[in-house]
Amino acid sequence: MKPSALHIDSSQAHAAQEHPSRSTLAQGIRQAFMYYGVSIMQTFVELGAFAAAQLALPTGIANGIAVACSGSFNFLMNRNITFKASSNFWRSVAMFIALYVWNFLFGTWFIGWAAATFGCPEMAGKFITMAMQGIWGFCLCKWAIFK
Image: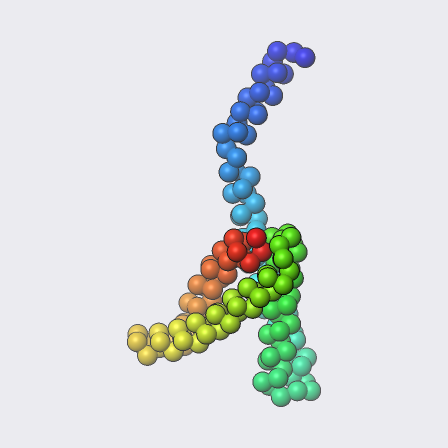
């Protein structure tokens, strides 16, 4: 082996040891893009399921079916593709459902609170809650639900 080749190999190894978080950062960025991409696709799944179910069912039931379909889609895509989780499946299901329940309760409260307290239009309150839920949802999925 040439001395220069040995020098390159050892310097590359040294650089990898100095910055092991680079691959972790790249993985986190990739996961964030995947997570938010799944969220966008989930919107279309929910709208499509709602439109189809509403043809034959009352609105409330159609909405329940649509939310269940979109939530299941979100769970499976993020568990299997975004985070490639191998954690306990049923533990992840329970935590994911708890997150959905929390998001619903918090969102409902926040929209009303922001409107009553600040005169914030309800649609603006909805967008604010969606942004907050997107941030803590990613963090919880990455570091708790699919860990």
